[in-house]
Length: 90
Image (cartoon, rainbow, N blue to C red; front, side, top):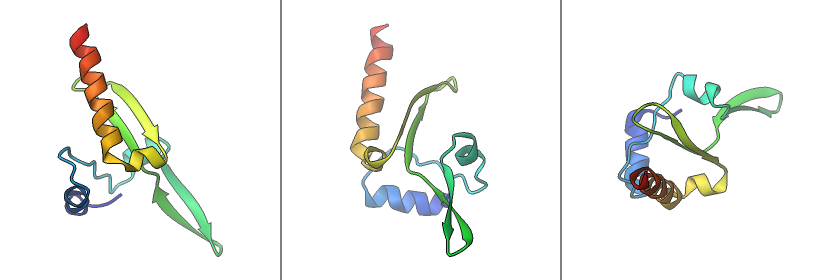
């Protein structure tokens, strides 16, 4: 949901070298089911769940992970390394 600039600052803060998706129009968040509405004192607020979604160069989703482990950038990196190894072994 954050701007590209905010995502770049967050990536720098957590020391990741891969790009973080900015989806300010919520199109991808909605289509992947990770945009949630929470009720706070009778008002609905939308919030994106953290998720790692790995999409290959052909646009095929290779991995989706949500929850606590998706917050750890090492998880995303290890998933990408594992997927790369599997592709290389073919």
